[in-house]
Image (cartoon, rainbow, N blue to C red):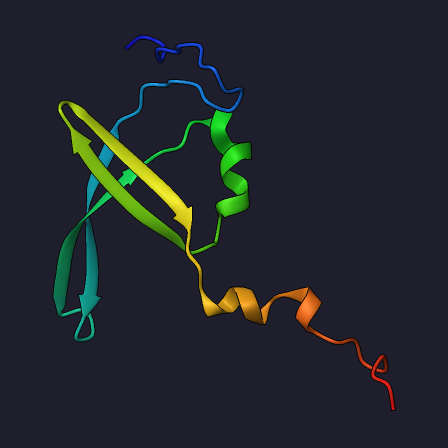
Length: 101
């Protein structure tokens, strides 16, 4: 098995690396472990050189868009707009004791 193919790209954070989609069979037990529910899980491992670019999106809701054209697969992840964003906005919260009487 050779090293991943890397091509120079125009953007500093963009680098072409060969990856593979991984598929595994997940099993969940139910009815006090008498029965097993099985389903397929597909994942894509992110190479280490992209970890810093991906870290800001960890534990956040993302919208997924997948398109296929000719012989290519394009996966686009964008941050989801949720009500949670407005609830956590620090500019909309007032500090205790700062209200005028």
